[in-house]
Image (cartoon, rainbow, N blue to C red):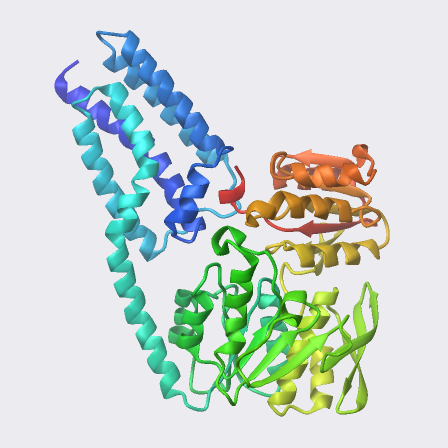
Length: 521
């Protein structure tokens, strides 16, 4: 075979193989928030099947390359081609929870990765086909690190320019009422609930979906904020120390809400004390004429000692000392009802939302509305019109089956409340869940407790991912739950197939949490 054809075959085989690995590595980098620390935890996870298969192939190719002293190039290239076709086929068949989103940022990353890989293929071609195959596979994952370092100045420059434009827009809009919302969980639900309560009385803008990062908030301000808006409701996310401090300086809200505090993102916060301090910066950094709204049912918030003397309004369902206390709570398939005493008078509220945490979120909204001068009769009316929040205890009909969709980012408190709601439903009570993630060293402990809490709340438990849900199953079995009523499937699609084939429209199915691909290892 001529040298030209060999070189052409080299290019086809190794660029084809690198395509699979570059796409997958970029996808995981994106799902890990473009953070090298998070990406490293995924890459070196002991149960990372994709990496394990690749590692085994590398060993096989190196072994063959060592045993064959001559004429090994075509054999190794043929095996590499076969492996590349196999990986491309597997990639085409796999249904991801969240595939790679090719943004402008990702396009820049692809360009840098392509240049680096082309250089490696060129230099590696002098080392032999076996060494080159290993280099392409290994370096496709490892090149994320130099690529991130190369593109970091560009991304930071773009981010800073856009953010400065957003700051200027906020500074020019002097009359805008700014509300910041944070918490370990409940931020998005509270944001949407508050918007529904206020929107009939004031022109509002909320950060869409889970746009709670500096870039998400920047995009919202630059693209959506108009002079007509009176209230800007800004969700503020934090998964490491300093995030809330940064966002408070960015947005500078007058009103701050802390929905809850718990062991969410322990992997990056490292301790519950760090989480408490960071979340409470939402109140500590308010101006002196600002107002903070807090959930007294949360033990971490209730025991916190503030240094900022600004006004605080507390809410609660279990803590009767709260300024706004909900009692006489009644749940049904139609929703919830409860009473609240405001300024010495009792008011009755109705909502289509389910779960104690949603009532807590409504109380936070009521408190804010009162501070904004909205009349109580309007608040009562608007609470009754609150829309169900997508994927957060949302009751829906799919193919004739009744689902309680609580698939967004399950947490220890919300998951228990979801089970409480499920326990009150008619027919067979079924839960489909991959468990909870991103909880650091406490993950197994919390998932085990989650399984224990399912006793008498669910009749059938469908777990997604054998390794991920092992602790849940242990918790279930420790309570005497019938093992025959515990089913484990590899994927969500397999679980849904079972549901549609074996359950009836009279049953109720709780979907608790969604598992990102980066954690599905």
